[in-house]
Image (cartoon, rainbow, N blue to C red; front, side):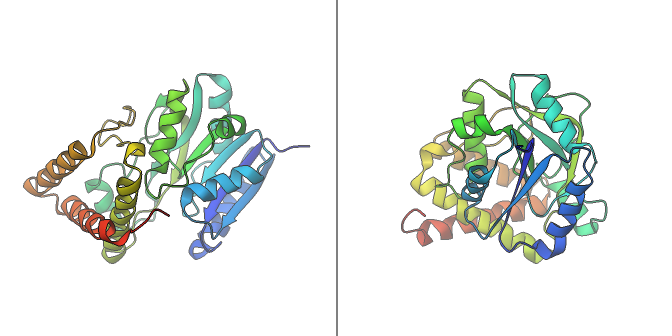
Length: 274
C-alpha cells in the first residue's frame, strides 16, 4: 500500500549538526503517520535534490522540509493535507516560519532587521509567497506534471517553480495553524558568509538564465513573484540598499553589500553554467 505522504529532506551530510535526527523525531510525533521519509543526501543544487526525492517518492503528497528546521506542531502534516484537499484551487501549501524559541540575541536582531525572516501563523488559508523550501506540500502528480524544479538554477529555483504553479492556475497558500522553526545564521561570520554565497549563486542564475529569474516580494508576502529586466532589478536593488543605509539598518545594509560583492565575484567566477 502506497503512503499518503512522502517527506523529502535534502541534506548535504545527512546530519546537519544533529538537527536532522531531531527533525525525524518531530516527524515521528505527527498525527499522520502514513508517511515515508526520503533523505536526499549529498545532492546539489537544491532543486536537483528535490527532484531526486520526488522521483523516488510513492506518496500522493510531497512534503518538503529543510534539514535545519524543527516542526512546531504535531498536526502540521494534517493541516497541510487538509488545506490541499479542502480547496482544489490551492496547488501548494506551506507552514509559517518563526525563528527558534531558543534563538539568541544576535538571531533575534537579524530577524527584526531582515525582511522575510518570519511570517505570521494564520487561522485560514492565506495566499503568500512565504511558502518556501523550508516547509511546503504539493500533490506529487502536480509536481511531476510541472516537470519538477529547474535544477539549472542555484538560487532562483524556488521562485521560478512557484511561478509555474501559479501559471498553471493554482494558488499558493499558508496552511492554518501550521508552523516550523527555521533558524537564522548563528553568528555574524556565518551571516556574512551566507550572504556572499547567495550573491554568488544569484550571479550564476542572472548570467546564464536571466529569463528564469523572478523577484520575490520584499514586504507584501501576498504578492506573486515578478519577472523584471535585469536593469530594473539592479536599480531596485541599489535603491533598497541605499534605503537601508539612510534608515540606519546596518544589518540589512551589510546583507545587501555582501550579496552585491558575492554577485560581482560570481560574475567573474562562473565561466559556464552548472
